[in-house]
Image (cartoon, rainbow, N blue to C red):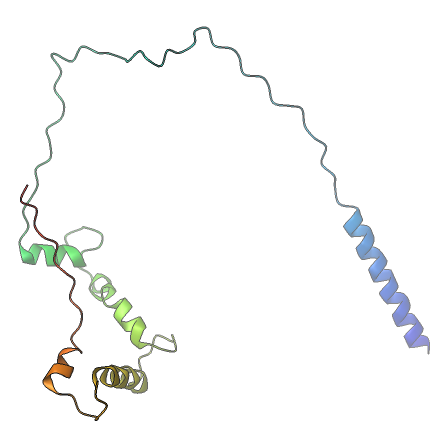
Length: 155
């Protein structure tokens, strides 16, 4: 009986402390209004354009486009920080998305089961007639999609 009464009294004290703490938060007083902007001496005229005498001036040289070979383009794709060196992490970074698609449970370990499930799903999608075998036309659908090439501009 004493424990129950003491427990109820303790609970009421904790509730009272919580209410007082909640009600006792600081109230911010509004500050003074911001100062009025000073009026400008002359109103700006929007129709007047600035002018300069550029007859003797010359701007910087325009950059020249560098034609890259296929191998240079491939190297540039892997060289993420453009330091002309490919590190192991830069080499592996291009395969991260493919790995994540295969890693179904997201533990960064690719088990045989995860690979097999993906391969079986790919086989089942390709097997249009459902006979458990792929003919050449069905096998052609398993090819990775290629990005369509942009037409070269003949401008």
